[in-house]
Length: 416
Image (tube, rainbow, N blue to C red; front, top):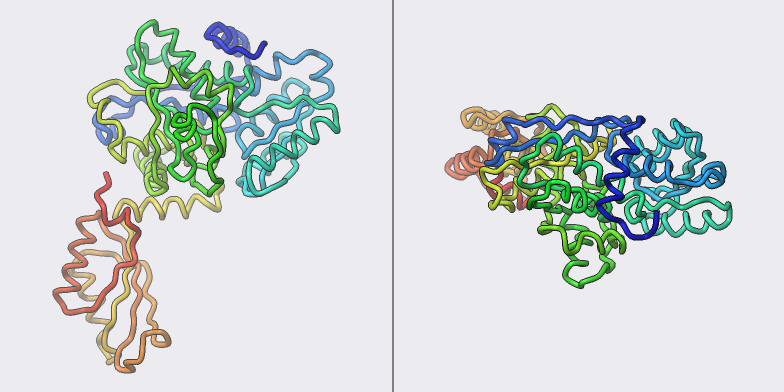
């Protein structure tokens, strides 16, 4: 394949991948998510691929297009996880040796799975850019073929097959919401919707902490943004791919950014309403709805691409708790009460009357201040919603208890 990526390349990739090795994932409608978003939502469950993400599409397509000698020598890639997993799995199926360079922050589950699938894993650097630079060095030193995770023509074409499946499953979809990291999936989808022969909105979503695509669109070309942490680690890209950007810049409808609180809440909503464990990157599209950023889609048929489900089990409980805080269902406050017998009992009785459930109480005399007759109590409680938190606050103030709520900004604002 040459450097130009076209709709014809996506269609050929679709035919190539239909021969086997991939799951044609379902795209059912979701009643609870539809009610939440105010439109008819269909969830494309691409986290059901064998390695848990859409990245298998581009990986297999790229491997199938390799000349015989390059297949024998092997391939290498830099990846935070899902591209590495896709290459490792399909490299194993196709008999292609795979080396992946992963940044040290890569989720442990993805590192372990790559190794289990037979890939050689090299951990290097604190950012994807550092991992990529090292992978390029190894490419030359070992005579390997480098397969870029989001800016390789074969990768873009392979990811675009997702759009073709969506249009077969939901032929009258008005919009497709796409998580946007390096731009490979978004570029492929903007090409793939050409098959509809009618307008289909393609909206990209990226974390506000690393808005590399938003910055590129503003500058008219890919630019660097600071590398920061995000729950959507699969979208943690400091600079979008030049080739991907060239494809999508005039085709994408628009791009929105979402907060970390909204990403956590989206993971929680999908877990509760869809019984689906979706990683932060895969849940980004729903986060945009939770923030009310897509009002123009009200009442329309919309497809959410749930692109990955590889959450590190050690991180999942923290993401769920972040989501509960953002949802107003978990809060913490510090109260100063008398250190006399019965004072703590009266506080817990007040909490009981407001209907909150106490998760944890810390009785702090050491750091409660110079007043030796008072004690500081730190309470973590479970509540129903933001309104319930406000009722709790009012009840404590009415009882004359000095209290400070240590909740993030997102908890004090309305969230669906």
